[in-house]
Length: 336
Image (cartoon, rainbow, N blue to C red; front, top):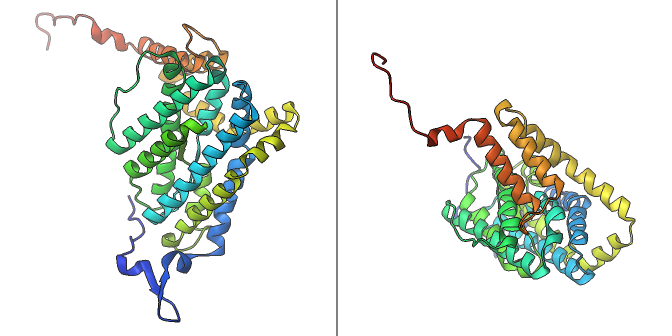
């Protein structure tokens, strides 16, 4: 891996102003290009992925106050993590809410009471934080329907579809991200804000690429300003969460659904391409996709969980993985 940008020393954190006093490094590194990159990242986040959150809220029959709280929580969580992690690591750490997680909720949130959904959000955030801090999976969840139907798929979708690409974007730009710090912090914030409706705050991928490249700044050590700017705009927009709900509520439902569909095209095409690339995984991936999209509910558990179960089972059966559980044949005489 290429060497990342040099980490500034304590002496480099500040420089002397013309009057002789210390000048904060953030002011020294401030640039119009980095600020614009952060603003563009936020605009992209709200132009499509937010509509998916609103679609999930509508599917869950949430009232305007609950929906406004949800938008406020994911905005504030994204803003705080952008600012805090960017300043701490001096990397352009851009976070957002989980778009695949919100899409998953469109098909599952309506099967549970609001309190159960919040409980699942808390568990998902706590598990992600634990995975991020320790690097290992923990068996923290009990055989409760809402936790299985929402928390397990939401956790997997957030880790695999958001945090993994987010770390990859930073690494591809020459940085050395500490995945335990980044994933652990976003998971902790998700758990803290879950009672307000936040389903998941995680590392961004597409919007992160806007802030990690040379377009943000030619000097990689000064691109973290884009992450800070992104966070500040998140905080400002999040303060008007109820206003956003009122605005989108006035739009035709068909238009909102169309915008949400367009926002998911990239993630859907990328996911399907990766899922059917290998011939041995193709049938299992199709079974998992169709089961999830069907909206079927068994034993009070939504289709997202059963899609995962049936997909894994199909993969094991079709690839002969169960044969290793049976008795082994004894080698014949004279064989090697």
